[in-house]
Length: 188
Image 1 (cartoon, rainbow, N blue to C red):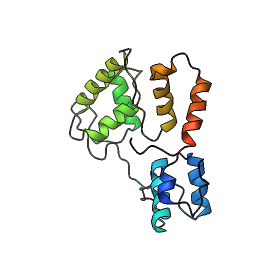
Image 2: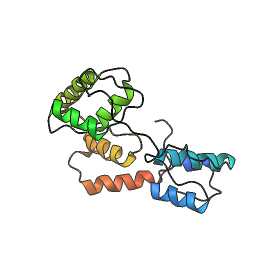
Image 3: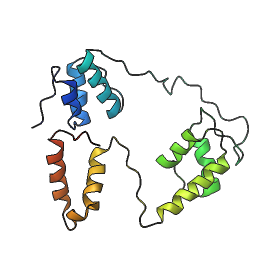
Image 4: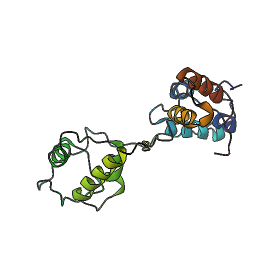
């Protein structure tokens, strides 16, 4: 049985269970911890608080309104280099729609490509876009589900397991509810 999340919860016990983000935010509010950030950031903040009593402030990001966004002085082209401060702006979106077509959008894949391929060109990004679109046509293609989306990962794994062939979505949700009420296996 899952314990109640309070300021006396053991940090290791806390990490043993699945918590909804709203539960984590509520805990933060009750204990004067910052509530901003992703579920993974909030979890790390609570773990630190439970382990050491430390109240870690989230890393401050410069607000968008204070950033000085300026349009590129040169027109965008296929030879434009992806820089460290690359932004998926309306100007960039318009360029890629012109080059790729109206079906272009800033997918997670292409945003990660920009982040992970500093120094490459927009030509490289266009090729990566087309390669990803081709992969999506493969019936075996499965979009990656980020680690923080545990429920979605569980449901996908549930239905991909041959043991669950023919089972319903409500049975999958029931299995998820059983799993999240028990401690995690630390073998993963």
